[in-house]
Image (cartoon, rainbow, N blue to C red; front, side, top):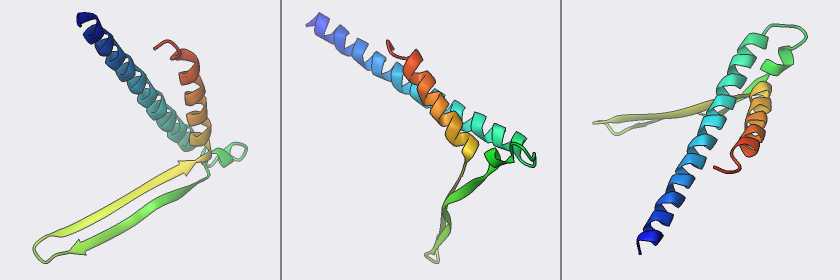
Length: 99
């Protein structure tokens, strides 16, 4: 019985580590891509890396007279973010095999 509990705890910790590493690599890819797009914006030979589109809902408001609710979510996806997220996924798959 004790061995089963230890095995379950190890599996949960393994899943937690793997999930945490995945989130870390994804966020690192997004931030690095946004920084790269900011640096490349306006440069003639790498300006295409800063090209992107806004995706999402601009602003939705619900006025209930007592409470006014506003929702909005905009994501700007750039070419450099796509490249850095792909690179982060490759690095994650190579480095976290035994995690």
